[in-house]
Length: 297
Image (cartoon, rainbow, N blue to C red):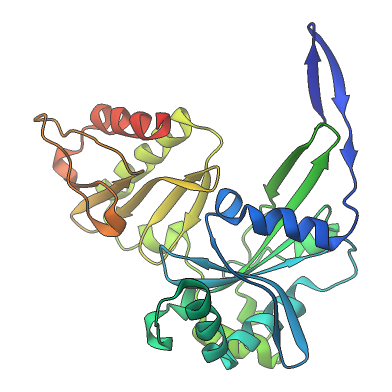
């Protein structure tokens, strides 16, 4: 759908403007990595052996690395290149840790990182139908993001969603060494994989909370992590929801919130305000109030 500019109630279409080259796309994204993806910038043009990785980012919430590649042309294989990069990372963990330590000034070891949630992001102005079809596996640690630069100095990033969630990548690609190696260590989690561990009452409560999130802000992006479902706006976390067998735990965007007794809600994981709600005590009106407050911050 085109984007329009309003001028005295008349619409004029804002034209898409081509990037000069991949480097321009990379430079803009790297300078705004936290705003776009919620990641910390670690390294640019990271060389390992015969490979050069465009951008190395880091997800501080799960202590995992993210490889970002920029493509102005469309002549590449999502699966082959993505798994080659992940395999390269798993074979050279010490190099990634060294880059992280040099960038942050923190003395970390390989054991301090969660390699199982590593992923690759491809950023391009356009993907082919074949490339978009290639992400229809349920356990693919690869994301596609379209980026469009507009003539009014506006830029838009849009995550490509799978048409449908199909088979496991391992079930159709057992002969590929990179895929086999990566799949043994890197795991992709889904909302369903988390919800199948809880009872129906918790599941229904979570789905109602999810509905509230979308009612308050329809422009959220979901990210599923090992034990929680996270909702982000503008690259920043809004609410994190962890369903378990007996309760739902929520963490809210940093701010000051009060519980139903008027007491200040204390911080928990990641220094985010934490709410533990037994399933029999879930007050969706109160939950809605808290999420709206977080969205307004």
